Length: 634
Image (spheres, rainbow, N blue to C red):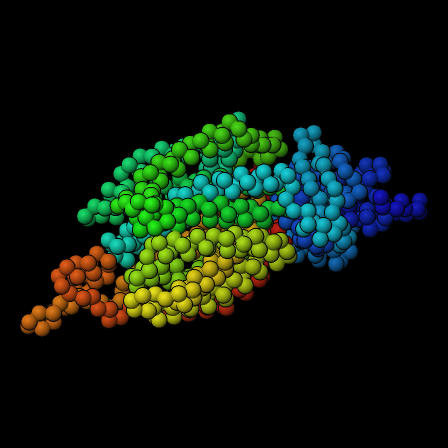
């Protein structure tokens, strides 16, 4: 309880400013502050590090519908509000800076929050919204260590597990589309055809176009997010079952219809991307404010498990050699798991989990205080977000930040050309999994400080170093047998690259959860994640086509009359090399475009990092939360 002032104390002229009360020693909770009118429909924020700067209070995105925060009270009803008034010049200057970019939901919002900034109160409080207009503040945590050591609550742990499960199912079609199918196609198609198939990932980059529909249309009885997750997973289950019975024939065809396969897997990714919109929005309300950074950890763990099962584990079990060596006593010509059996198995898992989600998991209903958002309003809000200068800068960063790693991402195909097998990559990816999970845990804790993008920023340099080392490894690839020394170096570099990549992904996604508004969480998170994905998608066809463009390879057939060189294109794909061998020729690589594209990617990436990416993100991460918010129409 703050000390009661003497009777001679003069009450502040502006009774709407709580800072004026507290600066003069007048308590907010002694029953005499009946003229105090705090702001309405405010936004409460909490800094997980317990920093006492007012700008850092805007961290948890927990929407408080009415009221003001008092560090000495548990629960109290709150009246209407107005602007702050009686304040010193320094306070006014800090408030002006906090409001420089954009107000949050109303003019008084950032002003009221700013009133407590200079008091040094560690408001590490749990909050919950009540229907009767009251706000409950549970146990105060005054020290940053206590805030961090509290960790996940029981409710947060259940929410965390649910998010992991949802993301794991989301990772199944992703692992197939981004990893398994390209590996199965690689022996039969060229890099240009693989570039065409890579377009199947574009729904992830274009989901922003329809994310407002996912935010605005829902059946309240089922839940805002379940209204989309449940039907989408049912459609995915049915599609997997149907495609499972036919896809192997499409891949084994003498002439593969890459356009048709691309269309089929575009559908898979479209459904997975729609689910991702709903899950992103749900995560912002499933987890409590101080633990929002764990949403990206759950996503990483779930996607890692799902994509590993669909890529690494499946490729191993789909290998006849692996199955005979490790799983069978009596050899067979059939793999342990076929693509048809795998897809039909997961179709069943999808269906069972979706039925449990529909009937066994209750989603919190929308609040009566939430604005009534239709599709038009959500698109309007999204347009307002896109007009924010800092959002435009951040999206520009996302579009170019991954360019330097694109040749590295394509290096697996080149090592397969050199002689590494699918089974080798499967074993390496299995070793990768614990490193990815470790990277997710490290990045989640690293991103809870007042520099949330530091993990993402610092991981750039090791990733560029790894890209250069992989290029060297490819250059010194041994002819014939691959010894344990070379394979050990390859595995070590791959594991380091996986760890750094995971740190970057979790770090930047944690920052997204901190700045996104929960009311339009699906749209806001989708906007940020979509452009992030697009930054890794648009360069991929360019790089793959660039490798083909810079490569020079010919099939040389020795005859009595001399050596005949055929068209270079016939030695670009594994299929072309096989035809050359059937003709009695040998494919000779005169120039490998992989080196040229690797050096171009690394050089351009480093220049962009030093001149644009790092300076911009260092500035952006220090902005107040008000700079990332817009007025939401009611």
